[in-house]
Length: 230
Image (cartoon, rainbow, N blue to C red):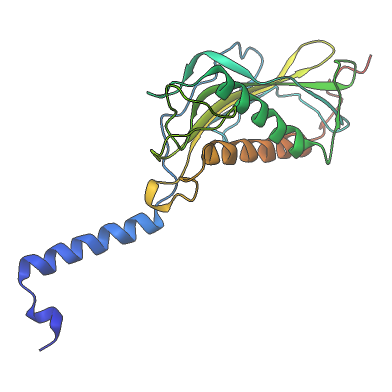
């Protein structure tokens, strides 16, 4: 008689249940938390129905076809920044602000001229972190390098942001978006031994999406107003 058949019925049932749960974990997508809502005035913008971001709005007549100059502002922190039950030092938050901007700049650098001052024919990108959670729980005190978490507690990281794309000369809002992303569940997460692995993965993803949005902005069907060239 096969070994399976000799097992008691309760044991077989428990093994089948464990197998189903294991298969489900292997095929499950990254966990998603509550989607953010863009905080700000969206007058004149229309929501894009299909988008890789939770929310995307753009000006209907937008034409970025000839725009190749971009100013990326320092990343801001939302006044009500969501850190869950984690409490970070200022140096930790400055670290992730800097890393977020660095990743976006790196994504755009191959196709756009990065400028430091606003001017005609340029875009201004304003990034705001609205939520952040590291893969390691921060310690309340102790010597460490900026951005380094010494705790041995491991978990799933997350980040959320909103972005505004404006005409650098006029300040007109051209595009706005909000998005939240969380790492894969713990059993499938390769970043649990890192400090900010899931957050940095989100920064890379947002940089790629911003690049694609800028490059794929359609040319005008007729004589539509574009970016200020004065």
